[in-house]
Length: 521
Image (cartoon, rainbow, N blue to C red; front, side, top):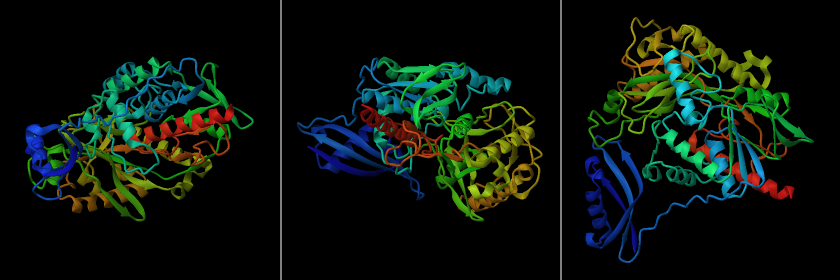
């Protein structure tokens, strides 16, 4: 038989597998010797009180009942000679769309402007060492998309219709640690993600799928309001009646292609701001009520949100034990983001702190029409580049100095590899962002005693939180509202925010493609 039990343990006990097994046996009222297996179903840290607990939910097997592996296998079908669907982009949405197409018996043809993950590493290293940005191979573009060199957070609040669990299963089947299946806030780590992405690529190729690296899409081919294929730089055409558009929120040229091709889009809210970095030990002390983290608790995280003058100010992509990285996609701009290794063992904690931007806030850029948000992003990124000295050095300011409007005579050490330079962010950031950030930080300081400190430093700018544009689609069919065979999905199309929600959206797009192929018969 199997019995579900719930335990609340101190962190040290929760880390001891034998102790957990014994306690599970006691909770299930089963003799320890009769237990045939214990499967952790859910694990979370409860740090709301000074006495920190680890909550475990487990399934205990005994007697003749064998422990059942709940993971559904990936069916590697040969799709070499099957119908083809084009996927634009090899980020989470594109890769998981490809895996789902294979399961459905359709051959994916992935077109990726960047390089494979191994080649991409060399270009990323050049950004930090030489301050040289390859516009097609960087932290945003290349195999795995922006998620490859990130924390790999897998927690999502998205209620989007789809199978979040299947995403975790597929990641585990391709090399991710089993704990992502039961941790309340699972993550992969930037040191693990490249290997997982390489394994996914192998599955796609082994099934007969096709991946074309270093191929930039310059046009979307249509006929009678239906997809016919894509045009690549150099004049090559790839033909298919189905195109999954999964290009990510930094592929700005795709929005220009859509506009010139009269592919319907709409403006949407997004957010911009800065990235803040504290000593991880300070965040641990705050979140663990003065307790030392020790060997049994994870690096502490936080989630903050406040309304300031009618706009949300909130933390975004919080990376405990992580690093700040340069995420520009062109030489003249400075963009910052965060990542963490799997062990989250850096001495720094960083997070985006951003301000909500709504379409009505962009009247200054109305001449850009539907792409006004892109122009606002670009302007702020170029300002950051100018204030960073026109290199990939980031403009920076101690937190309390920013809030009180004074220059930082010195800056603390930072994890940001290209380096930081003192700058008056409160003066050159748009007033609508700067004043809301200043008030937001004051309020965060009352929520987390010790958060508002000059030990912390802010770097500019955090501008790529999400797309300011949505490529419109039918919510039921996932097909574009006016162009048949076009399936916009993921972050770049305005329908996701993170690895899991993007992957789910990609898989749903693949299922919609399969239905369209049935209609075309």
